[in-house]
Image (cartoon, rainbow, N blue to C red):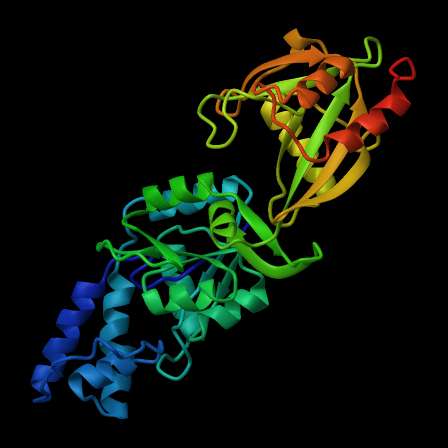
Length: 365
């Protein structure tokens, strides 16, 4: 995934220091502080300071260029920010630093930002400055996750389908973003989230990206994959038993493997990944056959078939997902379906699977 990260008050924690510096500067100028600016939208151009302290344009420019730069240059990264970014990149994620530091108020915002990042050994793949419109940058750069301290920026990027994480010391939450207090929490959250493409009613990718939970909550369309593995020697089907801790259908027998198609994946890549993760075996794309494409309410389901001689003792089960695995004959599965056996998940597409399997197993009538 491509992760966008703000600098000021995101990689650093300088909000109080900047507020004190602004107040001190305003006091020297004889400015009075505005009573309430809570309804003002932060435009990432110093408008909050102007509204709060009544700075003229030249006074604002002096504050941002001289006073703020002095604070930001001396700032140290938040605890574990550097280490978290390094781990994210090692995990295969790209890190784009996206800052609103711009050429209007800074002589060279790129040099200013790069020198601070390099001095503090913060890794990144790309540095973007002059980014007052964070949402537009996320759209242009195809960013999947964006981390910022400002709620307004998080809402903006969320509105274009980017997963927004706000880092702050308060507990303010919003349907458009999640607020986390430190970089350890951010790493844990990113490691666990499953980003997916939002589909339209015809199964086409819309360009929006959401977490799996949010797609379900928002009643959006998405894609999942399933696999039926048949042992060519015994003509039996390998099923997995879902873990007792699963939210849906715990302790029930299901298809060989399956799961959600992640953002950027196609269904073939997803079923190869899911099979390896859930039962620990490698399946080749050359041997996989897509036998069905069905639509179930908000889910588009691609079902694959493979013939492979796999012994139960060769399996490595993902304990969070799978509690057991065993082979069943097609006759046993037909009986379970027809009798509504509560130990098996009853898929609407099962009759179509049976039709396909009867062609594969000629002795079943």
